[in-house]
Image (cartoon, rainbow, N blue to C red; front, side, top):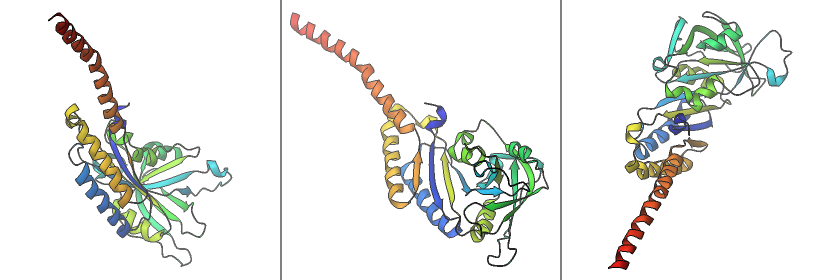
Length: 277
């Protein structure tokens, strides 16, 4: 198995982006993590990602499955994982759309990742308009690109996570614009502006390899099983993704099989000695 598959990822998907709803879900997930698996991971990376928007373009002739799209994400403590190479970091703003009013529009500030910004011809100071894919009567989202960003440390395990892949490198036929906004903007602007939008929330738990030892394997497996059980009951539409439990099971199985020849040899020696006594 790949080393990155051994980390633990928890997701709560298709949830509303309202702060109250998220806070309730977050409390349930965080309490389960503290109770079931607090000791074998080092820190947690918390993030969220919006539903998909269309990127408004003058030429709308592209087939629907190739029409450019965008997502808006946040990462808690972004400066640990992101560095701004041009422009400035976005400010947290509350500018929700006045739903029901003519010309209503939501406005946010965001970073664009360098690769995607180049494909879309964007730079610090650019503006781009996004259109919700889930309803034609939804207000547009106007995004001001305050800066261009890249990964702080490309080898950080977080960048191998499903959360990072979903936000930055979705496996799709359409061009994708990855945008990063402050957490408060995500909830204070996107939440009120798009009550029917869904969002996915992620907890990425880098495994502390020093704690993963043969002696601790049963405790780790028990903790992961307890986490799965608890979240399946308390948090609807949640999922725990890791290969750590299967890797430990495989290791234990191979270890037991490796002992078989030695055990047989020992039995033969004892049997022979008994025969000649």
